[in-house]
Image 1 (cartoon, rainbow, N blue to C red):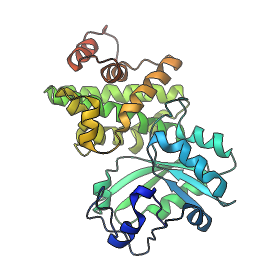
Image 2 (spheres, rainbow, N blue to C red):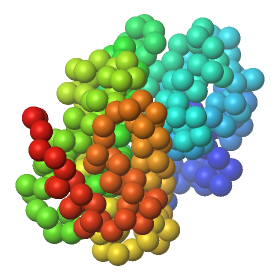
Image 3 (cartoon, rainbow, N blue to C red):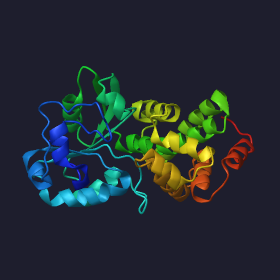
Image 4 (cartoon, rainbow, N blue to C red):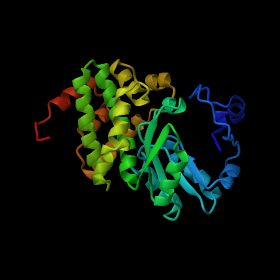
Amino acid sequence: MLWGRADDKPELLQQERENRRYLPGAMFPDPLEIEPDLVAGLQRTRNVLIAVPSHAFRKTLEDIQPHLRSDARLAWATKGFELATGKLPHQVAEEIFGSKIPLAVLSGPTFAREVGAGLPTALTVAATDPEFARDLASDISSDNFRAYTSDDLVGVEVGGAVKNVLAIGAGICDGLGFGSNTRIAMINRGLVEMTRLGIALGANKDTFMGLAGMGDLVLTCTDNQSRNRRMGLALASGQGIEQAQKEIDQVVEGVLAAKAVWSVSRALNVDMPICEQIYLILYENKPPQAAVEALMGRELRPE
């Protein structure tokens, strides 16, 4: 069953059997029902998958909390820290639901258009309960879609949040014409920053070598299907955030994530110079060229 907000026009989705605004050409499978009534849908299913931007995550959980079945299991594809609290999605979920309900996060290098076209894709499912991880991975896997399991929710969520920030940086570098050497240096050192933050929050270092870490980071930094990368390209060309956001016409998660990552890293005293410079570009009007010069002029140190 698929439920969406009122402005998603469920009757149109049912009639056209595709989302022509966001994913044209990806026809809904025959068994998929469009459920216009959220409460009715929640009562009919055990497994619930949330796919909303990070700023809407808490409100969505609060809306569904009274209507979940007693045996419900909750998963999400939401990426990013909560801006107001610095909490990861699983911490928000635990705050609302407690520790009894099984929780899971889906993350990895998965551009929607390619998934919708049936191109081979792999991602990570991390869950608090091993059975839920296995069940969810089995349910979503197919001939062209493969899910790996993990118990490291923190690492998977940190990877999903930080890669969006770094993708804006990659877009800026390419937009300024710096070339392949610059791009790969930024991706590699960005991975170091992502790993530092994850370890400080209790993640497993190995997670960042996987699909939800390096895999998602490389994809998002190098392909223009990435909204975050396109935001960076726009900023490098002199556009403002609002203008670029309007042209992209979808939520660019990295903009809010940059502020949240900056705040969390400062609170934990984690050194993240690339993410800090991206924050300064977005929120302190620092010229992109000056941000690059600041990074290149830092004191030399061991790798």
